Length: 188
Image (cartoon, rainbow, N blue to C red; front, side, top):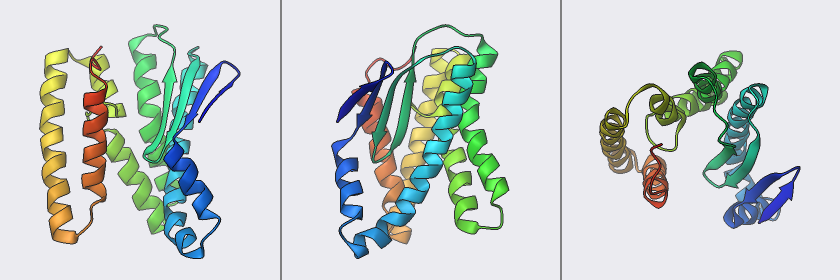
């Protein structure tokens, strides 16, 4: 579904709409999806912090995409100083760290937000860590670092899949690889 409001394109993935609707029709699904939606709120908070700093620095939002894997905000290509760009990309993980500190005594909230912060700091396209490195280093260094982290992510996800029968990190790895290869010329 695509909606255009205030010159901002809002895309909502059809699968996310189906999941949202199914949440209201089954108590079993509701129990299963409650944790997912709580995590989704943390992801939205993360993206709102990017939006806050980007708009403070004069960038305009072009698109907000909501998918089952999270939220992605695209800004216009207006040029900013290196420090301001770094602040925009660091704002998301810092927001999750702030939430983790604020809710230190609630294990679920603490752990999910630390996980989201660390995950987003990985130097893999399209995550914040990749964009931070893209601002600081040249393309060859970024490519090498990204390949190392992709290899580590793959190995760890396989270990968790086989050792703990938990496919979540492996599914994330597949999702990142799909985005990486669908978006052909992602290095600026």
